[in-house]
Length: 438
Image 1 (cartoon, helix red, strand yellow):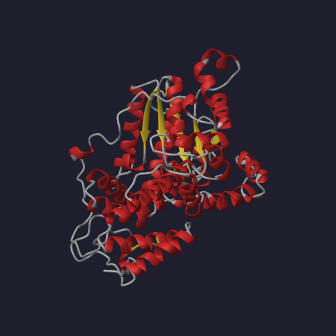
Image 2 (cartoon, helix red, strand yellow):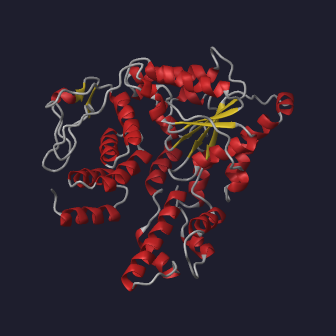
Image 3 (cartoon, helix red, strand yellow):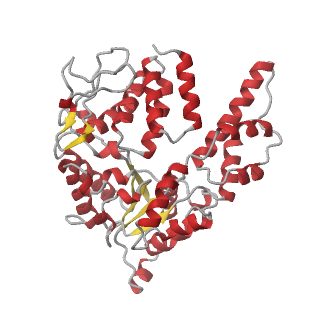
C-alpha cells in the first residue's frame, strides 16, 4: 500500500503538469495497487484518448475496468491489447511484476525482437498479487460473433451542433452536397468516391459531427473503433474489417465512421507486418476492390493525421480533410448552457464564461461544469442546505480546470511549420497564425 500523502502529492504534481502522461500512468498504477480502481480508469482513459495504442495505459484500463465490475469494457481493452502486441497469455509466474516504484519491470525476453526499444506487452500480473491474466479467446468464440455495434439512424443533425459554422460548411461542400445531388455532382465531375478525414484535438466533437452528417443524409450510422477490428489471431483483424464494410454495404445508405484511424491505418513503416496487413485490407475496402461501396459514406477521425499512412490519403480514399477545432464562442456558450440545464444554478452568465474559456475542448467544458457543481454540492453538504451553482463556483473551478488542448497544439505547430509542403495543413497553419501560435 502506498501512503495517501504520496498519492495526494502526485495528484497535485499532475494538476500542475496535466500533459505529463508518464506521471499520470505512475499515479494510476499506484492507485490501482491501493485498490482504487475507479480512480485509475479515468487516468488511463485520458492517456488513451491521445495515444490509443499506448500499451501501458491499456493494461491499466483493462485491470481497472475488470476491478470495477465492467467485464464488457475490460474485454474490449483486453482484445485491443492482445491485438497490438500479438502475445499469448503467459503461464503463471511468467508475468513481469511491478517494481517497488509501481512501474512495470521487463526482462530481455519481454522485448519485441523487431523493436528492441519497445516493451513487449505480455500482460503482467495485476497489482495486489492477484493471479489474473488477460483472457484469450479461441477463434470462433461465440463472444466474438458480433464485433461491432448495430447500425442505427441518428436523430441529430447540424441544427443540433452549436457553432462550428466553418466545419459545417466544409462538410457540406466536400461531402453532403455531392451526396444529396448526385446528378449535379456528375455534371460538374465531382466524384462520389472516397471518404473524409476529420482531425483535431481530442474532445472537440468529431464523433458527434459524424453522427450529425448521418442525420443530415438520413442514413444509417455505424461507428467502429479499434477494439471492434483488431484481434490477436493472424488474419482475424482483416476479416473483422471486411465484415464491418460488408455490414455497411448491406445497410446502405450508411455512414461508416472509423474512429482512431491513426491507429488502425498507421504508417506501415511504423508497424509490424501483422498490423500492416490491416492497412492493406483497409485500402482494398476503400477502393471497393471486390464489392461496390455505392451508398457507403466513409468518415474517419483522428487526433494525429500525420501518423496516417499516406496511401490512405490518396484520391478516391480519404482524400478530403476537415479540421475540427475547439468550439468557438457561440458553441462554448451553447455547451455550457446544455451542461447547466439540469442543474440548479443562479446568476451564471454563460456568455461571460464562454469568453473566458478560449481553447477549451467540449470535454473540458463539461469537466468545468462538473467541477463547479461539485464545489456547490460540497458547500451544500457543509452547510446542511442545498443551494444552486453560482458564479463564484465557476471562478474557483476555472483555477483548476485548464484547456487540455495545449499538448496537441504543440505537436500540431511543428507539423504545420515543418511538414506542410503539400498544403494539407493550411487550415491548421492559418488558425495557429491567427492566434500567434505560429
